[in-house]
Image 1 (cartoon, rainbow, N blue to C red):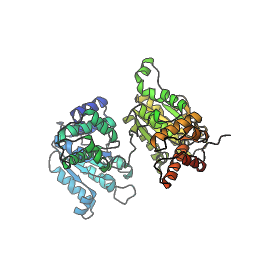
Image 2: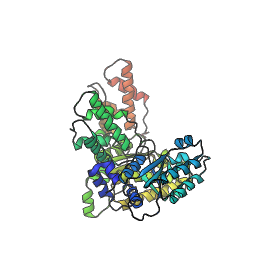
Image 3: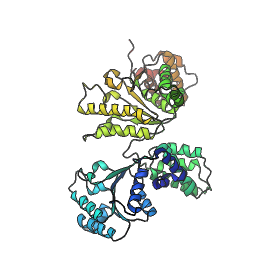
Image 4: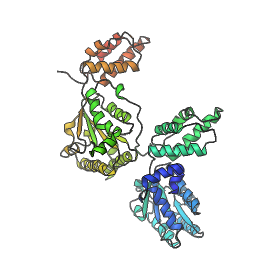
Length: 511
């Protein structure tokens, strides 16, 4: 079993990860450990590898190298740009040669270059032949050479081919976060341990985009909070009190699936037909997966919500994630547009990779027509994005993961037909303006969330708001609340709601 997996997840957690990736040579938990074994455990080892270790801040790149080095009794000679420049007055070539010579004087050594993108930036003036010299010297001295980076795309083009392998340490999935947190809680806490696995599961589900360093810091702060308050045990309140103190490393560079704020069907007024269609198309995929397999049928991979703005399409998508207990991955369309060639396609690919790692997962793309419109009207970048998007959708058939795609648009006729064909976003659900009965239901939901007068007449308000969407009705209540606030009232009155209707225009024009 991989030592890296044991480090991150504990014995039980490592066994879980190992079961998921058994015999998968592409998994970093196996590849890095295998490189150490081949280099330092064989009687006649092959030429030592040159490895690029990449991942976001806090995923444990340097720490894992140090940990494996201790296990294999290897001496690590690490260097940063600042240390090398200060020690040798900017003569980096001389500094590298001296570092390699020093490492070669001892058995079982490796050289670790931290933040490689600072040494060899893509837009810089550094001598990119420097790494070639260091690599050659390391091979002559039979030393393993490892470099780390948080930003591999910022490394000079002629530097990356010098590496024989690139290993990517990704942000942990929700299950991996749970095993990390449980291991830290059971092994590193000094206080009495009273939290159940259900409590830890609840806490880890809130920690979306947390990397190993963030989880360790949260646990440390929670224990400190308990000690400051002179408690003999750490409880959930200690974690809640310190949650806002964590500066999440994973949110800096990567999209991450999360548990949305709970939105249930009962929280959405009206839209009965849309909710029934989504229940059949999306929620059943997760709740009745065994039944689909038993019948030998494959459920739909995608649903397109279309209709006027403000009718509740985004709210419905969150409700699908909540009702199915799936993770939620909202995608901002502008984030997919990159300035460099090929980066937009990589961004699309990363979205689906994240969803697969965090399955069951709902991917939600709002304003779908903004980037996936007809190929006849879009530019070269748009055509490439559509092609990559279709490849990723079709790839979901091969991975056998619970990932569903929800799209939302105000103009379904503008979307490329290839995206809407059977096997892709093949279920279209119309989300229109609510009728009279649905407007009453929406107002009932809004009444439960605000301070309104008990004698308010919802039917009268609903009758005067034809063409108003859910967002419009929410704006009416908000405006009525401001009017009541100006009058120093403790509750929103019927009179102020009727006044607010006059200043808020409906989104849908009823003929």
